[in-house]
Image (cartoon, rainbow, N blue to C red):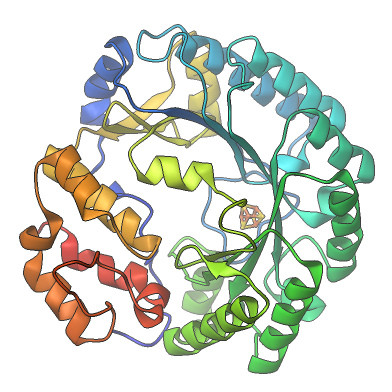
Length: 425
Ligand code: SF4
């Protein structure tokens, strides 16, 4: 494994990889929308592409210089897209099992904008049956009335993008918020008493040291979130950090992978000592019986995901798709009454099996019986050599005839770099 944090993407978000998705597959996406639904559960993802400032490590489709009129137009487009989507045979009348407001920064919207957006969505989608409504927040965009409004609007899982507690590090990485806003907003979040709260941290932000990381871990522990999510910083090519390091001919200033893994390992140890349980390569939860992440678990086990918004990713009846990735194209399509489809991919059964296998491993292990029953292939025998190799290198618990494959801590922390072994050539 290369140790340096070289420019590029290493996080495995889906399978087959996005470079295989194409505009040529859009007719297959349309056919999936027009067909009768499968028996899969269904969730909804909404992309809110606005941020106060662009983080220097960000590679998402976000807009930082927008007017209230832009936000209003976009919200109306989301509601219009919801009407278009729910008129499709594969979606009509189906209940939502989970809802996820992601971004960008969903909490960028004002209370009135949020209320109008949710009212517009509810004309098409009810989410009374949803087991979880997650909403991502940036600390500096919150106020106590906004936090209360989120609770009233039905948010059950509030996720706060803390990333780091050190002001110098937050500033060096272009984050819009500072630590005082984290502590202030956490009080409001605590008072609102959401069923579930999550804090995001990033290990290896520019300027991070072992000491500053330890202070962030202790600060996160003191807030007692229901779950903690830690990502290891990667540097895709279209980030400010990579562009400036290329212009200046300097190396990208991010800690190497072994250092980042050691930092996450230490954070995992400290949270486990405080009673948390590891629930994936990135997440710990306070009480595994009570604290769930339906979006992750259902999506990773093959649920349908209806995507709303510019550049949003969806999955319907086994077909992957992505919405148009530019503001004018997305809005133009929706305002013309068309599904704003950009590209897609109809994976084979084998590719869907690989997808569920690798996504399952990101949680630490798979249920081979479930996959064998669903896909008619036993993953243990199909990838026997890969499992053995992982075990030999210490990434997998020793396999016995009775056991299910489980990654070791070492394997979990490097999971995204191991999953390629299961990919087809
Ligand atoms: S808050 Fe998130 S989406 Fe917005 S610029 Fe930063 S990393 Fe990107």
